[in-house]
Length: 207
DNA sequence: CGACCGATCGTCT
DNA sequence: GACGATCGGTCGA
Image 1 (tube, helix red, strand yellow):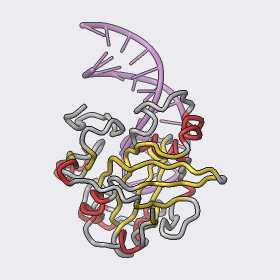
Image 2 (cartoon, protein in one colour):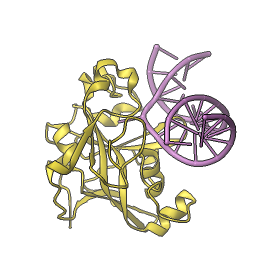
Image 3 (cartoon, rainbow, N blue to C red):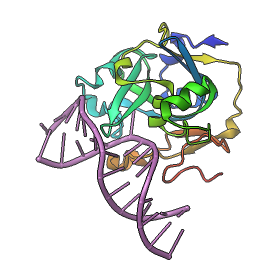
Protein backbone atom coordinates (compact mmCIF):
# COMPACT_ATOMS: atom_id res chain seq x y z
CA UNK A 1 0.00 0.00 0.00
CA UNK A 2 2.24 2.82 -1.18
CA UNK A 3 1.70 6.05 -3.02
CA UNK A 4 3.01 6.06 -6.58
CA UNK A 5 6.27 8.06 -6.79
CA UNK A 6 7.08 10.81 -9.25
CA UNK A 7 9.20 8.37 -11.27
CA UNK A 8 6.07 6.38 -12.15
CA UNK A 9 4.51 9.36 -13.92
CA UNK A 10 7.48 11.05 -15.53
CA UNK A 11 8.30 8.16 -17.85
CA UNK A 12 8.02 8.64 -21.59
CA UNK A 13 5.48 6.02 -22.66
CA UNK A 14 1.95 7.28 -22.00
CA UNK A 15 0.39 4.07 -23.33
CA UNK A 16 2.43 1.92 -20.98
CA UNK A 17 1.55 4.13 -18.01
CA UNK A 18 -2.13 4.06 -18.97
CA UNK A 19 -2.07 0.26 -18.81
CA UNK A 20 -0.09 0.21 -15.56
CA UNK A 21 -2.64 2.47 -13.89
CA UNK A 22 -5.23 -0.31 -14.22
CA UNK A 23 -5.56 -2.00 -10.82
CA UNK A 24 -4.10 0.99 -8.95
CA UNK A 25 -6.16 2.82 -6.35
CA UNK A 26 -7.28 6.43 -6.85
CA UNK A 27 -7.86 8.10 -3.47
CA UNK A 28 -9.34 11.47 -2.51
CA UNK A 29 -9.62 13.04 0.91
CA UNK A 30 -12.07 15.91 0.66
CA UNK A 31 -13.02 17.76 3.84
CA UNK A 32 -11.47 14.89 5.77
CA UNK A 33 -13.55 12.20 4.09
CA UNK A 34 -11.71 9.45 2.23
CA UNK A 35 -13.18 7.91 -0.92
CA UNK A 36 -11.30 5.55 -3.21
CA UNK A 37 -11.67 3.15 -6.09
CA UNK A 38 -9.60 0.76 -8.17
CA UNK A 39 -8.92 2.13 -11.65
CA UNK A 40 -10.48 -0.17 -14.27
CA UNK A 41 -10.49 2.02 -17.40
CA UNK A 42 -8.12 4.66 -18.79
CA UNK A 43 -7.45 6.57 -22.01
CA UNK A 44 -4.09 7.84 -23.25
CA UNK A 45 -3.75 11.30 -24.81
CA UNK A 46 -0.42 11.68 -26.56
CA UNK A 47 0.04 15.43 -26.43
CA UNK A 48 1.26 17.47 -29.36
CA UNK A 49 1.01 14.73 -31.98
CA UNK A 50 -2.51 13.56 -31.04
CA UNK A 51 -5.46 15.40 -32.58
CA UNK A 52 -7.68 14.20 -29.75
CA UNK A 53 -5.50 15.91 -27.15
CA UNK A 54 -6.19 19.41 -25.89
CA UNK A 55 -2.47 20.01 -26.36
CA UNK A 56 -2.45 18.99 -30.03
CA UNK A 57 0.05 20.97 -32.05
CA UNK A 58 1.54 22.38 -28.86
CA UNK A 59 -1.59 24.36 -28.04
CA UNK A 60 -0.97 26.07 -24.76
CA UNK A 61 -3.82 28.02 -23.25
CA UNK A 62 -4.99 29.01 -19.82
CA UNK A 63 -6.87 25.76 -19.48
CA UNK A 64 -4.15 23.45 -20.80
CA UNK A 65 -1.16 24.98 -19.04
CA UNK A 66 -1.16 22.29 -16.36
CA UNK A 67 -0.69 19.65 -19.06
CA UNK A 68 2.82 21.04 -19.47
CA UNK A 69 3.68 20.46 -15.82
CA UNK A 70 5.68 17.41 -14.80
CA UNK A 71 4.10 13.97 -14.74
CA UNK A 72 1.98 13.30 -11.67
CA UNK A 73 0.05 16.56 -11.88
CA UNK A 74 -3.75 16.51 -12.03
CA UNK A 75 -5.46 18.00 -15.09
CA UNK A 76 -9.16 18.57 -14.45
CA UNK A 77 -11.36 20.40 -16.93
CA UNK A 78 -15.04 21.13 -17.42
CA UNK A 79 -16.71 19.09 -20.14
CA UNK A 80 -20.09 19.98 -21.67
CA UNK A 81 -20.51 22.62 -18.98
CA UNK A 82 -21.44 19.95 -16.46
CA UNK A 83 -18.74 17.37 -15.89
CA UNK A 84 -15.30 17.75 -14.32
CA UNK A 85 -13.08 15.21 -16.07
CA UNK A 86 -9.99 14.00 -14.18
CA UNK A 87 -6.72 13.32 -15.97
CA UNK A 88 -3.23 12.46 -14.78
CA UNK A 89 -0.41 14.30 -16.56
CA UNK A 90 2.53 12.13 -17.56
CA UNK A 91 6.08 12.54 -18.95
CA UNK A 92 8.59 15.27 -18.12
CA UNK A 93 7.63 18.93 -17.83
CA UNK A 94 6.88 20.61 -21.19
CA UNK A 95 5.65 17.32 -22.72
CA UNK A 96 1.84 17.51 -22.36
CA UNK A 97 0.85 13.85 -22.17
CA UNK A 98 -2.23 12.95 -20.10
CA UNK A 99 -4.30 9.96 -19.06
CA UNK A 100 -8.06 10.21 -18.59
CA UNK A 101 -9.45 8.08 -15.77
CA UNK A 102 -12.73 6.73 -17.16
CA UNK A 103 -13.95 4.24 -14.56
CA UNK A 104 -13.34 2.87 -11.08
CA UNK A 105 -14.47 -0.02 -8.94
CA UNK A 106 -15.53 1.63 -5.64
CA UNK A 107 -13.45 0.54 -2.63
CA UNK A 108 -13.59 3.07 0.21
CA UNK A 109 -16.22 5.61 1.28
CA UNK A 110 -19.00 4.11 -0.79
CA UNK A 111 -21.66 5.75 1.39
CA UNK A 112 -20.13 9.15 0.66
CA UNK A 113 -20.04 8.39 -3.06
CA UNK A 114 -23.72 7.46 -3.05
CA UNK A 115 -24.50 10.70 -1.25
CA UNK A 116 -22.57 12.80 -3.78
CA UNK A 117 -24.26 11.07 -6.71
CA UNK A 118 -27.73 11.01 -5.16
CA UNK A 119 -27.97 7.26 -5.49
CA UNK A 120 -29.22 4.60 -3.12
CA UNK A 121 -27.31 1.53 -4.23
CA UNK A 122 -23.75 1.07 -5.47
CA UNK A 123 -24.52 -0.55 -8.82
CA UNK A 124 -22.24 -0.27 -11.84
CA UNK A 125 -23.61 3.17 -12.75
CA UNK A 126 -21.91 4.79 -9.74
CA UNK A 127 -18.40 5.21 -11.18
CA UNK A 128 -18.55 3.85 -14.75
CA UNK A 129 -17.68 6.99 -16.71
CA UNK A 130 -15.24 9.91 -16.37
CA UNK A 131 -17.88 12.41 -15.25
CA UNK A 132 -19.18 9.99 -12.65
CA UNK A 133 -15.70 9.22 -11.30
CA UNK A 134 -15.12 12.88 -10.48
CA UNK A 135 -18.58 13.27 -9.03
CA UNK A 136 -18.24 10.24 -6.77
CA UNK A 137 -14.77 11.21 -5.52
CA UNK A 138 -15.51 14.93 -5.14
CA UNK A 139 -12.97 16.05 -7.75
CA UNK A 140 -13.57 19.44 -9.40
CA UNK A 141 -11.70 21.82 -11.69
CA UNK A 142 -10.27 23.63 -8.70
CA UNK A 143 -8.10 20.55 -8.14
CA UNK A 144 -6.44 21.03 -11.53
CA UNK A 145 -2.70 21.40 -11.06
CA UNK A 146 -2.66 19.37 -7.84
CA UNK A 147 0.55 17.31 -7.46
CA UNK A 148 -0.50 13.69 -6.90
CA UNK A 149 2.96 12.88 -5.53
CA UNK A 150 2.60 15.18 -2.51
CA UNK A 151 -1.09 16.17 -2.37
CA UNK A 152 -3.17 15.58 0.75
CA UNK A 153 -6.34 15.74 -1.38
CA UNK A 154 -5.79 13.38 -4.34
CA UNK A 155 -3.27 10.62 -4.95
CA UNK A 156 -2.79 7.13 -6.40
CA UNK A 157 -1.66 4.03 -4.48
CA UNK A 158 -0.22 0.70 -5.47
CA UNK A 159 -2.08 -1.87 -3.37
CA UNK A 160 -0.10 -4.80 -4.72
CA UNK A 161 -2.82 -5.91 -7.11
CA UNK A 162 -1.19 -7.52 -10.14
CA UNK A 163 -2.95 -7.31 -13.50
CA UNK A 164 -2.26 -10.01 -16.05
CA UNK A 165 -1.67 -8.33 -19.44
CA UNK A 166 -4.04 -10.85 -21.06
CA UNK A 167 -6.85 -9.35 -18.95
CA UNK A 168 -6.35 -5.86 -20.40
CA UNK A 169 -8.66 -4.95 -23.25
CA UNK A 170 -7.90 -2.28 -25.85
CA UNK A 171 -10.30 -0.14 -27.87
CA UNK A 172 -10.63 3.25 -29.51
CA UNK A 173 -11.32 6.26 -27.35
CA UNK A 174 -14.83 7.54 -26.68
CA UNK A 175 -16.17 10.80 -28.07
CA UNK A 176 -13.19 11.85 -30.15
CA UNK A 177 -14.56 11.40 -33.69
CA UNK A 178 -13.39 14.95 -34.48
CA UNK A 179 -9.77 13.74 -34.14
CA UNK A 180 -9.79 12.23 -37.65
CA UNK A 181 -7.20 9.47 -38.07
CA UNK A 182 -6.11 9.78 -34.45
CA UNK A 183 -9.61 8.69 -33.40
CA UNK A 184 -8.58 5.23 -34.62
CA UNK A 185 -5.71 4.88 -32.16
CA UNK A 186 -6.34 1.98 -29.74
CA UNK A 187 -5.73 4.17 -26.73
CA UNK A 188 -8.51 3.05 -24.39
CA UNK A 189 -7.57 0.37 -21.90
CA UNK A 190 -9.81 -1.53 -19.51
CA UNK A 191 -10.02 -4.65 -17.38
CA UNK A 192 -11.87 -7.30 -19.37
CA UNK A 193 -15.14 -8.52 -17.92
CA UNK A 194 -15.04 -5.95 -15.13
CA UNK A 195 -18.58 -4.74 -14.37
CA UNK A 196 -17.38 -1.24 -13.50
CA UNK A 197 -16.03 -0.42 -16.97
CA UNK A 198 -18.04 2.33 -18.69
CA UNK A 199 -20.71 1.54 -21.27
CA UNK A 200 -20.51 4.06 -24.06
CA UNK A 201 -20.76 3.46 -27.72
CA UNK A 202 -18.21 1.14 -29.26
CA UNK A 203 -17.42 -0.33 -25.90
CA UNK A 204 -15.79 -3.53 -24.84
CA UNK A 205 -17.34 -6.53 -26.52
CA UNK A 206 -17.85 -8.15 -23.17
CA UNK A 207 -20.44 -8.17 -20.48
C1' DC B 1 -32.42 -2.66 -25.72
C1' DG B 2 -31.15 1.71 -28.99
C1' DA B 3 -31.73 6.46 -30.57
C1' DC B 4 -32.36 10.89 -29.37
C1' DC B 5 -32.21 15.10 -26.61
C1' DG B 6 -31.60 18.69 -23.20
C1' DA B 7 -28.67 20.49 -19.58
C1' DT B 8 -25.05 24.01 -18.96
C1' DC B 9 -20.79 26.96 -19.18
C1' DG B 10 -15.79 27.72 -19.77
C1' DT B 11 -12.82 28.03 -23.56
C1' DC B 12 -11.25 29.40 -27.87
C1' DT B 13 -12.11 31.59 -32.53
C1' DG C 1 -21.03 32.47 -31.07
C1' DA C 2 -20.00 27.51 -31.48
C1' DC C 3 -18.57 23.62 -29.36
C1' DG C 4 -17.38 19.82 -26.45
C1' DA C 5 -12.53 13.47 -23.82
C1' DT C 6 -20.77 13.29 -20.72
C1' DC C 7 -24.93 11.81 -18.38
C1' DG C 8 -29.51 10.52 -17.44
C1' DG C 9 -33.98 10.66 -18.84
C1' DT C 10 -37.58 9.63 -22.31
C1' DC C 11 -39.63 7.44 -26.13
C1' DG C 12 -40.53 3.74 -29.26
C1' DA C 13 -39.83 -1.07 -30.73
